[in-house]
Every structure is written in structure tokens, then in C-alpha cells.
Image (tube, rainbow over all chains, first blue to last red; front, side, top):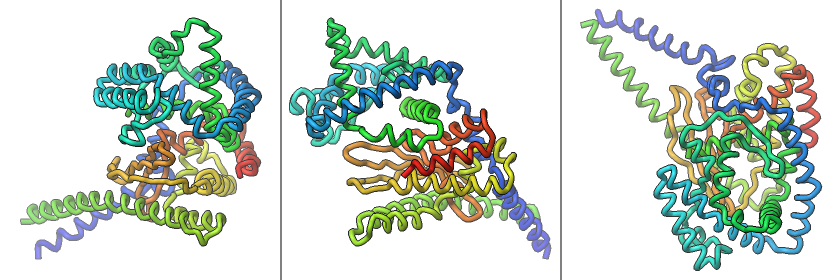
Length: 242
Length: 197
């Protein structure tokens, strides 16, 4: 009979445990809301916002007045397949950036796969026009850049920046961008005009493969600047974590 | 004797809750797998019109989302508690409509393959399920965040390529509310939803 005394005790424990679990579910469950309120690494540090918004508005006009119309016209002349070839070619060209930054983050497997991809695509893939490494050998790219390497070494929580023609960035990724220029074959072209023309073509070709996406984001956002800024920063955090 | 009984009961109770946790993980994983499977079969159904497909997808996915909690999270405790019941109701309606238009109605079938990865127990009642959707040779890594609400396991946030629905909206709402009132935000949401189509 002694044991029966225990039962109410156990029931109380179970009930109080369950009550505790659901006590706040009608309002703000703290275990969920703290992910969005206290996790400061996701709150973008943007003290230069007025300046950034100005550059953002400028880039927006560059896109709508020049980049998009030219990409649209260009896409009418060249079929999608050829534009994909160009895109693959430029991607293949930037192999040194991916290789070095994989090594700098001790991602030797990634560096190996990137090397295999570069060799396959440069030979069988006709100087990089075709991504045979992916389609035939299922080798996926291991994208790493110097901004990600700096993030890997905990250079984080930096100030957000907008650059004319380049777009959203921050201090970390700006240093990364400059660092990567040394590994970018295009920056070794001595004539600045030719290098600039190649860069513009590359950007136009890329835009032609993503027409409509930018407009869609603009329509769906309530504050376009902070929407693009947050998307950029959140995506970078994820790429660094990988 | 009594102490031993309590101890045994505790062990039983703890082992049961541990068992329940591993069970939760596979439950949530299967929930997501089944829903994705069903959604793809709806999209592949050639007898259905585009509108019917959208409605069926919504019917299928709607019970899985906890819109109440999502709306609260995007505003944050600070602003949510300041709102009147009418404002709350209006906001919830507009927010739900927006999620439906921006995310659910956009689900189309372009040779999508997917892989749902093992679930991760984040906290006692929070489970994350990572998944990879592949379309046209590109991978989109996605993270579904579930919590155990009173009505069972529900999604409270989705991350696509690291970009969280809640964080992105929260920051935009905060931006508007830092300069305007709650009614300004509601007006903006209402006028903007006409553009999104």
C-alpha cells in the first residue's frame, strides 16, 4: 500500500513538467524568440546606412537603366546554352581563387575536387565552356573566396558597405575582394579598358541568365535596401560556416 | 522502499522521454518527407489546372506552418505587445497572405530532386530538418525549423541558402517601425501585397 502514496507525487511531477513546457506557448516561447532577438551575429552592423543607401540607389539605376536592358538584348542574340558556356568559362577561369582559399581553410578535399574539376573542364570541357566535371563525374564546385577565409579566421561582425557597380559588401568581404584580385587572371590584363570590358561582359552574361529575379525581389520587399543587405549578410554567414 | 520506487519511476520516466525524443526526430523527418512527396505528386498531376495545383499545395502545406508564431517573431516582443487586438488580427491576415503569395504559390516543378537529411534536435522542443533541393544542376540547401506547439509539430521558420524568412522580414519591419507607426506598417503591407502577384 505504501507505493500508492508515490503515485500522486509522480503525477504532480509529470503535470508540472508539462505545464512548464507549454506555459508560454500562447505568447512568446522564449526558446524560439531568443534565436531572433539575442543572436547578435545576424543583426547587421550598418552605421554608414545613409551613405550605403545612396550607393544602393545608384546601383539600382545602373541595373535598371543599363545592365538589364543590355542583358535582355544580348539574351535575344545568344541562346541560353551559349550564355551558359560563357558563364562556365569565367567560372573555370577563377579556379585559383577557389583552390587557394580551400587550402587556407584546410579544406584539402575541396581543393582536390576543385583541381580535378579544373583539369577536367579545361581539357574535356573545352577550356571550361562545359562543366563536364559536374555532368559526367558528379564533382560539385567547392566555392571559397578570401572573404570566407577571413570569416573562417573569425574576422566577423564587420560594418556593411555598398560599392558602386559591385553591390553589397562589408569590410571583411572588401578585403577579401581585393585579396582575390591577385588570384584573378582578368586583373593581370595590362590594359585597364580591356579588363573592364571583360568584367562588364561577364556581369552582363551572368545577368542575362538571371533576368527577372532582381525585379521579383524588389516587388516583394517592403524595404528593398535592408532586404538585399540582409540577404547578402545571412548568405555570407552560411557560406563561411560551411 | 519508497525511495527505490521513486527512483525506478524516475528512470522509467526519463527513459520514456528520451525514447520520445528520438521518436520525435523521425516523426518530424517523415512528416516533411511525406509532405514533399505529396507536393511533388500534386505538381506532376497533369489533370489539375495551375490554380487547382496552387490550392492543393496550400491545403497540404498550410497545417504544417505556425503562422501565429511566425507573425509574432517577425515583429518581436517589443512591437507585438504594443498592438491592439484588431491590429494583431489584421497583421496576421496580411502576413499569412504574403507568405502564401511569395513562397507557396511560387512552387513550380522544374525537374526538382530533393534529399531530406537526418533531423537535428536543437532544443527540447525544437527540431531542425536540413534538406537539399536540386533544380537545373544547382543545389539549394534549405533548413526547416520545427517546434512542438500545442497542436503538434509545426514549422516556424525556413532558411534557404542561409537566408531566414523570419530574420529578413523582421529587419524590414523594424526598419519601417523605427520611423513610423504600426498602422504605417499595415498600410505598407496592404499596398505592397497588390504588387506581389
